[in-house]
Length: 114
Image 1 (tube, rainbow, N blue to C red):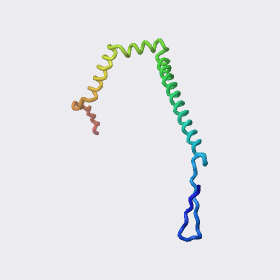
Image 2: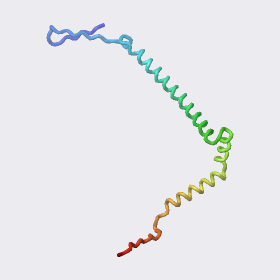
Image 3: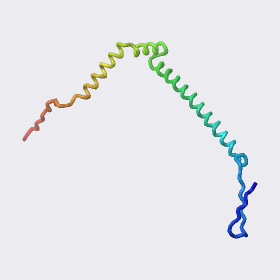
Image 4: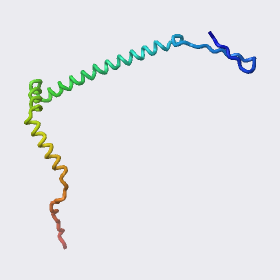
């Protein structure tokens, strides 16, 4: 039902009509956008899983196959390997943190005089 608004002058009459969402077709657009977002999220999850599986295959191929990859994983998880790697990393860190106060003697070059 339109509401009539009458301006100060009696010659101007303005009618306004309240529109529903169904009238201009906005609700179906929102449903389509929501469905599209859900579909894109599912595709994103599926592709992420595929990339992670492919990464494992790439690592297995890098070490020479699936059986070698399992051996490498056993090595990585062994306590001896972890201890060895920790010692090497600590040694490298120590070398980087030592100040360079001891300088080696610079060789002096003498040019021949005429």
